[in-house]
Image 1: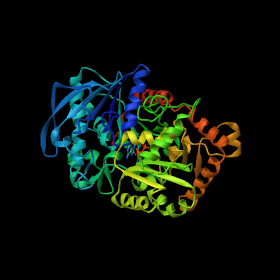
Image 2: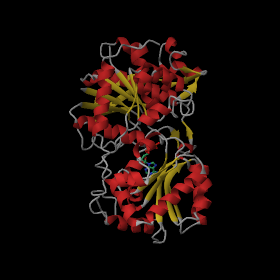
Image 3: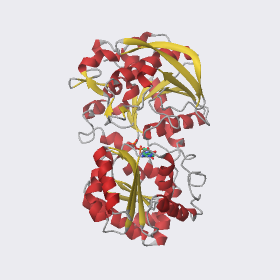
Image 4: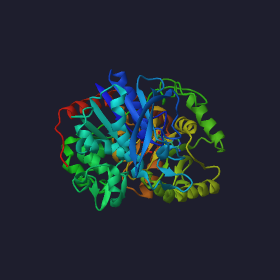
Length: 491
Ligand code: ADP
């Protein structure tokens, strides 16, 4: 099948979070299963052009009130058969940040114009690429308007696009692409599609909602999150829309890129190791303590790598910190995000210099070193569509301590006498979003850590689980087939 992905991020070329990991690994896995896969991304300033070359293809597309020229760059995603086309529109994408101005820490005010341009440039450029997809797979709100245009816009009747099936994946429902209604015309959608039956939402434009209503099939990144987002608690205002489309919505658990995240070959590590011979992990722990200025102690070393935002439970960690310091643990945090979280974490590191180390910023190498060097990995998320780090952790023999939400609930099996005996236990899972529950979970982890044979079994169970994309890629291929048999959706 010919599969066209439309996405704002694509690892390893451009990534700020899990979205990039998923589009990169999924396209690679689909290609490995024999599908012809292409990915269209914006040519951000920070996009790595490795393997890409400027082509002669130039199209025009509206950017706010003006028409701009968009040049296509093409090449292969490094080490794969996946063809990448980057859409180069400097007015919109030659900037320091992807979504936000890093100097101000606020979203670019013209984001609707930028991502409308991206989606319309996709529609304009594809017919010049000598290739027709069998299905278009859009990711998150940045690409959702492609589905809306194909269902409701002029593109619907263009020969290149007629009858094109679409799939939209929600990687995180909290990011919807919300803009003032006055900007609605910038979507380029006909007025009927800008109302309540389309992108109109509580007096605003909601790009994701447009995609949720117009795509032939919907997916999200774990079965539990697929159920959660149909409830008021997790639905971010779109639960009714999702309930309406419940029959078309599938939760497909993300895999991980097992080549990039492999402790046996990882070049970022001080030593390499595997499930059969985990000895090198101790050297990784010492190297991490040394690198971050923590004393070499035998205590449970807990790692965290995440965006420092409310979703990830940073407030919970901060509220629990004083009590956590009463438990024999060291804590390493790598992340960036809200200034107040960054400041509070740095203050904690100053107060507990031999217990807490904090690194602010995005650092791929250090992320790998934390996954390998930590004994346990903490994810106290308020909500978590899938989460990747808990899977990286298990593969690296680092026992995840997670809250029972979304993909965390689907991937980590709580340690109990029964699951330990059955060989299924892989981590510590807690329920309540409270400091007490978090501290109790960490205390359970330290108790298990104090029993080395038990801990080694936990590590081994996690390290030998299959988190590859093979199954998920097959599940997506089935959704593509379903999309191809669907009728168009009217606004
Ligand atoms: P989300 O997409 O919500 O941020 P995921 O767990 O799905 O969360 O994916 C996050 C990805 O981004 C992981 O690969 C994680 O290691 C990476 N990541 C997040 N913050 C950082 C950081 N500061 N430095 C390096 N990698 C990071």
